[in-house]
Image (cartoon, rainbow, N blue to C red; front, side, top):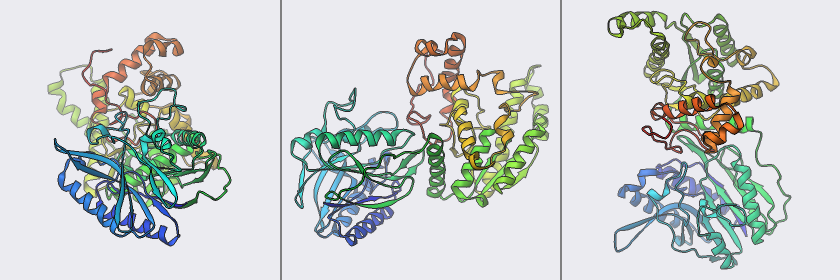
Length: 545
């Protein structure tokens, strides 16, 4: 069978736009003389549609759009993802479905069986599970159609499975001759290699060709990398879609193709490309043409500025340099050098007069001889005022510059450096920020070497460094990764770190800072556990507090 994989970038809720994408892709597939065109999971509505699904008017519009798409089909088959609903004795059942259309009508519908309810997934809130799965005979093949999670539960691959049901096994028991999985699978580093390995094992075990079609794009914090895959009946990856862009590829199951061995770049390249793509998508889909960043001369704001330039162009990136009396000449020089290297627009305005006057006015109510923390936070908040004023005045999107390590332990100021519309590197540990920066400079210095080499500092008081209050970032990040991404607790972590006081301090800092993260900007997700929707931790709790 000759199959067109249509890797598109839908927009959540933009039905006319998505409908047009599907029809245009289908027409291209017809011109390519294929037997079947396949689009991703929920291609018509975008993923994840969240509470839009609860609107009856929205569901009705989706149903009408699906019928319109089907009406455009001829003898070439079309599979795309959408929501469907069925009446029952109680009310309505809503499903995440794959529909197969040809000859002007929807001929077959397969609902999703495995409904994920972990990390960033909350599909149980909206969707019912399929009661059964069925193959569909089409042009001499028995199609086994599944949706995303349905294929992630093979008993021979996974040490522990999440679900008792295995819809793929059920399809194979019905003698499926071709497996098709439509997907909207959010990316993080390492997941693409896992996909390849898992799908390869499945197609090899079942001796069945497998077509996996994934959407591309970013929806707020979630980044979808595309890279649709085709496997022959020996488990070889033989077709691979482009990463971070739309693609159209044709796979003939009878054609003998050479195996593709590598599907993922290095950590530094993948994470950087993912963040650039995620920011570009956020700006594009929310119609932000320009961004503004507070540039300090430190590594984090330098990396965010570089990402912004790559995402939307140097002409659309504006930075504010906002020195205080504690800002070092070296940092200001480093900031100016980066501005020159990236050829971006900048403004330099001191925050000190506003800080001094505010402290003077607060004297009557603070009644304290010790204002160290107050003054430090005030500096960050005055910078936030400047940045938000610039954003409001010019309509630019403000980018926050905090990294994952700082966000984890609360080394950030509410209504100060946390101001902004999107947190670009808040899922990147500090040590990884340096790795990515060094990789950017591999062919020549773009981020000034002094920014990378100097001791990190917020420069909110004399001779301050991050390590005045935090353990070395190498140790801190090791603790944080075990705690946040591996769900390890004190005893397990301390066996590795071997310093009870530091481990206790770090875990306490993470837990007590939850209220800050709850008010932060959306975080572009590039790890298996990012702050935000995928980590739902109680603010008020007594486990370690």
